[in-house]
Amino acid sequence: MGTATFWWRARSISVGVGSDWRLYEARIQKRGIVVSTRRRSSSLPTLIVSSMPYEKELAAAKKAATLAARLCQKVQKALLQSDVHSKSDKSPVTVADYGSQALISFILERELPSEPFSIVAEEDSGDLRKESGQDTLKRITELVNDTLASEGSNSFSILTTDDVLTAIDNGKSEGGSVGLHWVLDPIDGTKGFVRGDQYAIALGLLHEGKVVLGVLACPNLPLASIGSNQQHSSNEVGCLFFAKVGDGTYMQALGGSTQTRVHVCDIDNPEEASFFESFEAAHSSHDLSSSIAEKLGVKAPPVRIDSQAKYGALSRGDGAIYLRFPHKGYREKIWDHAAGSIVVTEAGGIVTDAAGNPLDFSKGKFLDVVSGIIVTNQKLMPSLLRAVKEALNEKASSL
Ligand SMILES: Nc1ncnc2c1ncn2[C@@H]1O[C@H](COP(=O)(O)OS(=O)(=O)O)[C@@H](OP(=O)(O)O)[C@H]1O
Ligand SMILES: [Mg+2]
Image (cartoon, rainbow, N blue to C red; front, side):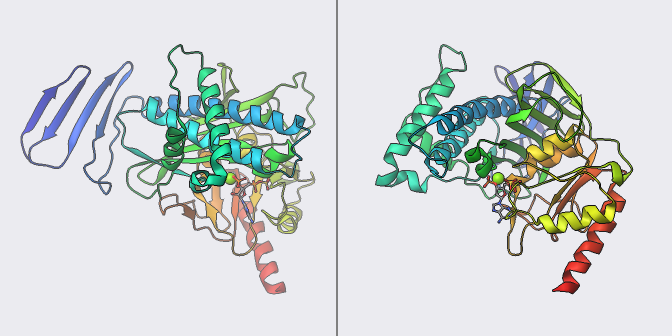
């Protein structure tokens, strides 16, 4: 072990440990000390030791997802009101997808300037760099700049079209088991977005391959519970769910500041449970879900909503089970589950594949899951797993 050397800087202490490759930087923050290794190579680990770990990252993620939701709301409103664009016109969706990704990428860089992270995101700028993409790029740049201006700061940055392309392409990382990787779906539930239904902006953070925080902005999700018979006075929509490892899950109104801790439901009798599944039958086998529900004795009809809004709704106890069984050949992407899974687990739920294995986010862009993904509370998981196994066996033997 070498000798420790200290360098003092304005607001930080840096400690070099002898001839070791590591350079630890302790940044004294308002309410805690973060110690992070400045990596000299991407294969080296990143340490974060703090009395409030991931606090700054969570604040940045909430800000980024909230602003991206504002951009998407504007585009969805124009899309639904427009006489020009029919709902089958995909161009506004493209504008919102890219705009959301550019904005989030830009805000993460701006809010976390000294952190060595990468971003794994759904979109890339290939089409926007072509001659045919120039008008779309200009529109995206306008949208991003308008949204940044709406933050209320006098000194907001104005991005050029090149800045927007760079911000989008910062999402090209492959992820992995080492370091810090943001995982972003700029619009999850694109089909719901086009229909005027549910969608989510989903942003998670992986640290050494594990999801350590997640934020889900669900602009069209009612603040009051869905999927139940309860009567609510409020028709307000727009929810922000967020969770940090070991810290629980919270929900607040999108753009609001009062946060409420949420928990998955406490039901232990499957007959009282209701379940969520994809709106689109092409994304998840409704037949298989229905056979599992029947085996469990579930009486309520399925609640079909788009996107990771399902994870959010389940985390606050709106329903007890989420079943997702993509058709053969489909490979799940990490951005469709990273944020949602921690939102549910920190609310007391369990997320596994159909064989009961935890999801492994450390293998790059894809999740290798057995047959599907199932989500529920601790009490229902054993009977759910049995029903899933039976239904899958029956399906296999009928083929
Ligand atoms: N064939 C197929 N099978 C399974 N999943 C698929 C498939 N195609 C797409 N996708 C992914 O599903 C994401 C939308 O999530 P949901 O299935 O929850 O939405 S929906 O309720 O069906 O609208 C959707 O996310 P977005 O592309 O971000 O909208 C896709 O990542
Ligand atoms: Mg998605």
